[in-house]
Length: 337
Image 1 (spheres, one colour):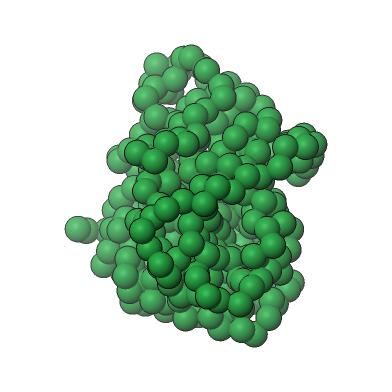
Image 2: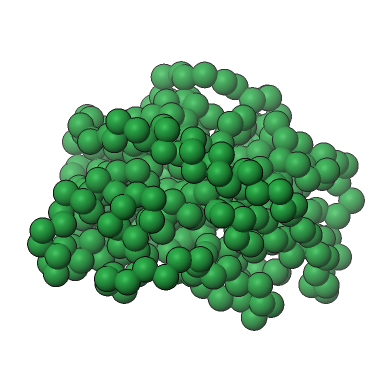
């Protein structure tokens, strides 16, 4: 697969000037204050998976507007509590799946919460999270749902769900509230960056090949779904370009990254034709906390896969063993993989 975007040297030098809404912080403060006003408590029901070394709970968390959001909470059996916790957000079109499918972090000795993404994916175990809004005038997909106004946009609800899931695990008796790390691949990476900006007191964040970064540029250069949803919408609605990109700026993870200070481990793939590397670098360069980077020079959107999971396991172990650094620090030199 050839390069489809800028070279690594160009990406390392890139400092895009992004249009930031003047009320971005007020918008998200108001949104989260409204969500946290809900007095519904999270619920955890034990699940019989047939496994003996991991205990799993079917979680229901009040998300945006108090709407129930499903998830799995995995706890390693026999480990002393409270535990460090990995909160994971999923890729585009994926739901939480089956309770026994994703056990890496629990096997490494951490609590692991997997958030179901509203309106996406499925689970034969039931408990799928539906979307609360019915919005017309969109092309297939999620990027243009409610794109007429920031208040209506789909990812406003998803980001709020994600922050509320972090709130929920922080209050769980099995979890150490000072040792929570958020992570995700693609869409999940963009959500993780947003949560790192919007949730206080995280120990770390691991965004992999993140989606939803420098969205205007991505819509212009990506020839692959999901970003093509924006171009398809604007091909039909030629007079709405300014409105669309103003709305999307409120959920642009590259803009929100400048508010995030937890230590971060990014991964970026230079032959990624779904989340162009220049857009991922926009988030990396704007990230305000201490940050490490792994660059997969000859990989596409699959990124580092198992090789990067090994990097993450070592990074989280060292991070949580050393305690939680705070504040902004210069980036470490990127490592090519």
